[in-house]
Length: 248
Image (cartoon, rainbow, N blue to C red):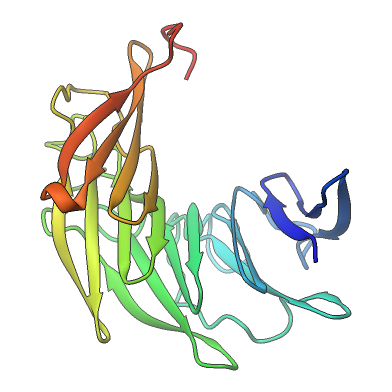
């Protein structure tokens, strides 16, 4: 069976990644044609596709929204099917600015929520996606944009906050671990050469014991590898072989 990938576009396209060609299978469009920023973030795991629309203003101005679809033998169904039960929206919350999914858990970033942003955990009970936790940085401050990037693997979440560290936009990334139904912040990651306006945490990814965190501004760009097995120590900085300042 060919694998599928979900592309980040103004609309979301489901694409078959067969051995010979890449063919559009289906186009997932917003149920409301006036939905703003639909497809700004996407994630895919097993039969579920998650699509963020962080500037959706259906309920409140730029409160944001997330649409969950399910792949079936007859095609993708949703989002009118009740696969999402989301927290009450707040104006300029930008819920859905980033999304990640791993098996029966979805992580949704909302960098405009509250003081410094938040990430929401939703878990699938076989019928509905129910909100089960709200993750907030222990040192949350105004403008830190916590939730601007999220990653999820197993019981571990990685959340970027590119405006963190004293409001200088130097950035940071936070590790949360789940034990049972409880999520606990276990590490705050910052680069060894961090500086104001680095925007560290602009992008994040998890794989096993490794975390990869992007940093990008007009003067410097790169990505940092951190290893949980080494106590979340920074083990390498990855930079382009032909860096061009301002080409982030």
